[in-house]
Structure formats: C-alpha cells, structure tokens
Image (tube, rainbow, N blue to C red):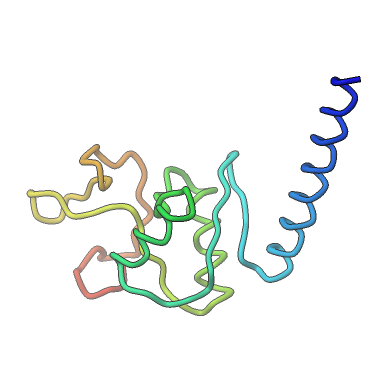
Amino acid sequence: LVDNEMEDVLHQLEHRISRLEGVLHLEKKITASGGKIFATNGKRADFYTTLKKCKEAGGSIATPRNLGENNAILYFVKNFNTYAYLGIKESLIPSKFQFLDGTRLNYTNWHLNEPSGKGEE
C-alpha cells in the first residue's frame, strides 16, 4: 500500500510540474537545452541583482557552454528584446574571459570584433 501511495504522490507531483512548465513555456519564461533549464522573470535588473535572484531561485546565472545553451539564452534576448547577463568575467589578462569561479572558458560565440567593452559582446 505504501508503494502505491508513493506512486500516486509522484504522479501528482509530475502532473503539477508539467502544468507549471507548460504555463512558463506559454509565457516564454522557460526553455531547456542539454538537460539544463533556463528561466527568466522577464524583468530588467543590474548584474548583481541578477546573480542574487538566480541564487534565490536555486540556480545560477546562465553560462553558455555550447551552441545549444547559447541559443537558449538568445531565446530570451529575442523574446524580451533585451540583453542577458552571463556568468563570465574578464580575467586579469585584458581581453581574456573566464567563468565567475575563475575557470577558463571552453566555448565562446562573440560577435565580430567583440568583446570591445561597449556592451555589444
């Protein structure tokens, strides 16, 4: 009986999650790539507020590690007609970038002649 009850609870949770994901997809506030979920609240904020909100939601600021993840981030940029902050920073060596934890980038997709420091990166 306990196994059946647990199965019922799991089924109900899966159903609720599926409905919530459906609503978020309709509002273009969630997308996925490579097993990762990318989400936005659609609001503009500064970099540090964005970091804080991501952490409060149990996630982290987006760090594209391949073309699919880059496209997931672009999905929000295009749908909300805005920019996106990424979890990367310039290293101590000018024009060299790294992840926020200091590890080296293994994927980039800069525009031509970027990064220039003019916000078009």
